[in-house]
Length: 151
Ligand SMILES: CC(C)(COP(=O)(O)OP(=O)(O)OC[C@H]1O[C@@H](n2cnc3c(N)ncnc32)[C@H](O)[C@@H]1OP(=O)(O)O)[C@@H](O)C(=O)NCCC(=O)NCCS
Image 1 (tube, helix red, strand yellow):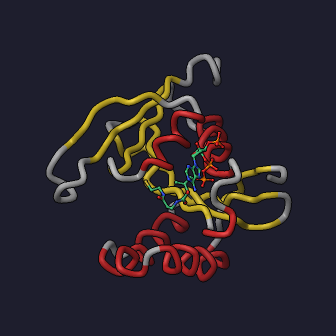
Image 2 (spheres, rainbow, N blue to C red):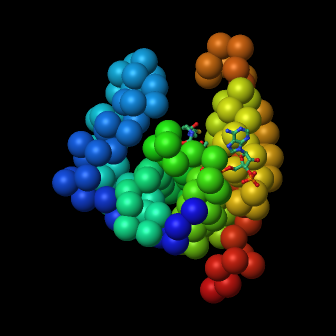
């Protein structure tokens, strides 16, 4: 793993980010209107590119729409860069940019790698919601940032 940094995405990054997401899961990309989501997020300054040294290896959509707390809407690591500690490092880093004392996110119960990455980044399980994806409940996670980001 190189030196991991986050950088605000610009509209010039859109084709790359759309391509990363599309290549990982074409069906979800289309069904969940991810191109539109990524575009809106870039325009609202809520999209961060993950750099490993100078290479763009993934992105995070981050906002404050979860009861006014920091919220990781989506994190994508390009397939060839997965499993090298980049996701958990980037999740930890977005916590440093977060302006609220708590940060939340969620993932499907079936996504064990995301759950491990969240645990590694210091998040703890906050609860389970049924009914979003049939047969695959949504697991919520949070991290208290008051020690990491003292005011
Ligand atoms: C989920 C995701 C963001 C995690 O990022 P990552 O860089 O691949 O994960 P990390 O390398 O930081 O791994 C974190 C932990 O997960 C586990 N892990 C990672 N890859 C694994 C694999 N292929 N098999 C089993 N466990 C794995 C390890 O326990 C690892 O901890 P370790 O480094 O101490 O061994 C990334 O894999 C991804 O983009 N996946 C597809 C999109 C997605 O699911 N996004 C989340 C939507 S909610």
